[in-house]
Length: 304
Image: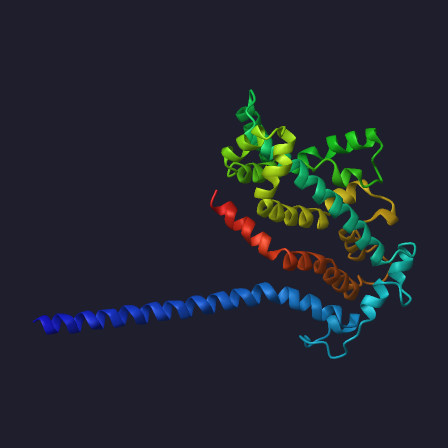
């Protein structure tokens, strides 16, 4: 009887292991299909950027460039004649990449500084109405951004900031999400460290600069990537406030390419794909270089 029960247990364990193995195989197949679905648009963007315009819409579909060329990139850089570049007053994509880079870097530095400073205040400095103010700030996240488009434009126009980069940077420097993100990280800083800094003669800003910032570096790195990406990819705000071609950001330039205002010709999708690939490269480079800090920031944030 005991031998029979042992045999049955072995059979059950084998069946359970077989089901688990089949489940893993099925899971991996589903994940692989999902991976292909996510990677295919990126693959299509790269290959299409190396095709002439006629080959992009040729039938049957060409999944690999049969006539690979770099003319699309050379045209965007103004190295070969281009109707598009002429329509932009001779400004090449290099100008718009530089514009977006300057705006995104200045915005990112300002955002992480103000968010970390406000997060430190909400987390470690006791003042009257702190919790109520923090809740009110979080409540503003429920207000759609579109509600403030007209009032914000009126304010920006009164300040004389239209056709400048200031409305692309200053109004969104201290967003509720950024402050909330850094506040959650700053709560992990031990109060004993702050007390020790006070005993050594540090003031509130000295404690923030010398004690808090080194501890919350992973959170700052993750927030910096989020802030850079959001500003780099921003389209609506530059579209509203920028009318001068030389001030265009890269997304605004890509939107110009994808519109009928380029010329009477069809939309130059070969240039759209090439420009889109160039716009993705800085994000990929930043993520690769800061991947360790980014993952550490997200991991630490999940434990808060």
